[in-house]
Length: 387
Image 1 (tube, rainbow, N blue to C red):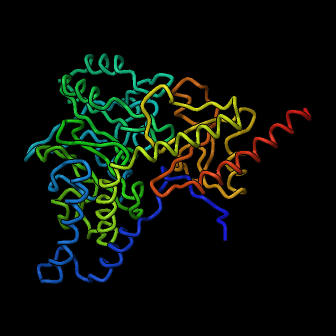
Image 2 (image 1 turned 90 degrees about the horizontal axis):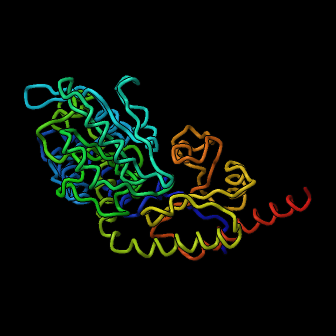
Image 3 (image 1 turned 135 degrees about the vertical axis):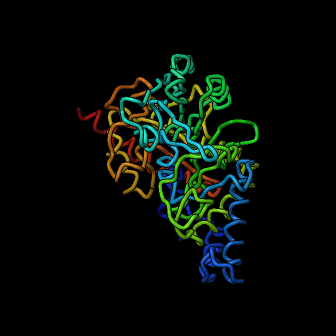
């Protein structure tokens, strides 16, 4: 029987990989607490440490510098704070610098008062204004504390990739700390912590085919860490209290292994994305595809159909059997204007559709998208004729 639906919303949440599911099921049979010292507890601990090594390998970091959290939002909340520890002492971050196109969990500033969150503009492709960032950091009064910069490696809506290496150089020269939201980037572009691309990374399991409800902070070193949000029994070296979510962490580790291996085939994903964009341009010649003037993730396209609201088009696609997004999925189900497009200079009323795919996306999926878009374009043309 021919398929009637396709899932093209990987940036919201990638389908659970079979390897991750198998790892989770196996972990569910390990009944012990990972903090217990008996043989059963040590078996549970081994699963967590194996996953820690796999997550570290995905970004070429040290396993001991990985701290598991309940997800990227918790990781961001923990990192975006003025209060940090260095050994037995404390370090203060006096200001937070973010880009106007960042994910809401970064853009909202975490625990910083709004007056201390400095927003950096972006260009028409969504690339951060590095001159503005440099000037803001140069004006920073280090006597008040260190500047903290948080920015996404790749945008969740457009897929545009930031020049993280250059940003890291600017932040380092200013004596600041750099937090990189790598949630969308890992498994889609190489990330190498050993090359100095960030002081801290934020990762999320379910964006790479692992389970929901688990993420990680990855640090370049263990000299300095933010004060923990959750204290308790000293788990995660005291950085995040509470008994670890063993099954989810095991699934995360399995997904990280597969994501690392999958980097070799990411060019093929890009070819399929390009095919989708060719369909859009053929069926809707005046469609606008955003971010094409900058490097983008191979799996993401973000486009607007003139004359059709994004939420209307999204519903039409869904009724036609195609699951895609109208921007970020992290707005409690609300569909509205994209703050990313507004930051890029496209106004505050424009909405767009995001198609995000993965290694499992094939010709049949793309054909279902083509059929759905053809129907939408045909009805749009009929309305224009009748007007």
